[in-house]
Length: 93
Image 1 (tube, rainbow, N blue to C red):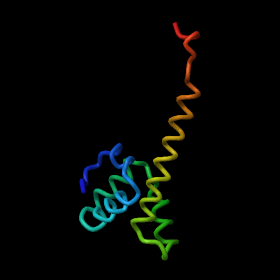
Image 2 (image 1 turned 90 degrees about the vertical axis):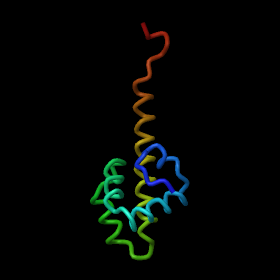
Image 3 (image 1 turned 45 degrees about the vertical axis):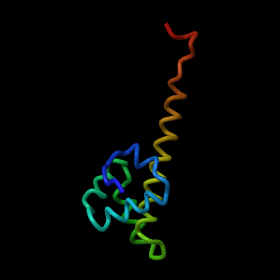
Image 4 (image 1 turned 180 degrees about the vertical axis):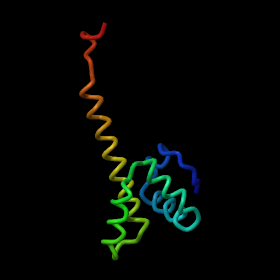
């Protein structure tokens, strides 16, 4: 599996692929995982809380869910911004 930090590629992973990718980073390049979370803008405090308050779910699953949630938030925000700034063809010069 590719361990590059191409955010668009990561956003298109299936959950299973994302879990494998995260597991690989946890075991082989933890620094890259931290950088990935930073680039995707997953709050460090959120990850700390998830890890300290969840003892029944595996770490990869917690991190994957946080990434998926953040990616969805960003997509929703982007769509909302597009809609707010949409100018009809009649109003364009």
